[in-house]
Length: 192
Image (cartoon, rainbow, N blue to C red; front, side):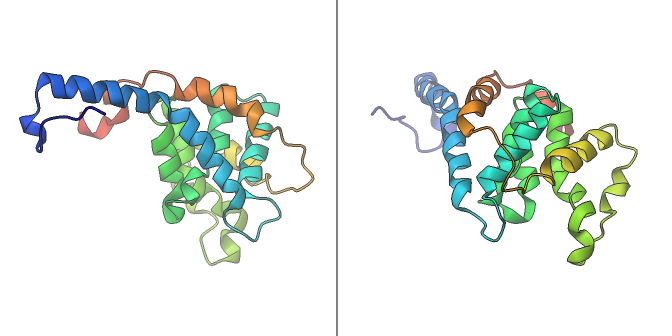
């Protein structure tokens, strides 16, 4: 395998960076495959529920699609808990970061906030404020996030629910994560 000549980024040549771009392009193109592997791993994570985290994700996505959600929201429902494995205390933000380059701002905001919005359904049972989400009541995507949590996420722990299989959602996931990324000003709005 070819390698770059530099040991510091500022010493790299145009040829070095052309080589890296080729490798990075292939790596980015394989993102859907890595996400599918990560989703499959959810089948063995976080014990105690009546369904696996994968089944919860499939139920959420199935419910979103049955409710008429667009492809971005269906895939968001599918991957919304991917962060549980690597970042359980802020899994919502990790899911949002994964999708941010490929979807509209509304979807990213929903993913980022869904953890807090879920307190509505269980916060009082573990000492959290179930109304924590109210501080965002006037946000333009509040109702969208409320719907995501109320109708798809918090409902998706039913072992008898007829979820569609991961293979059904795979083409949707591949479509979303094969898109060219949005403009960097959209990805990093606070830095502009």
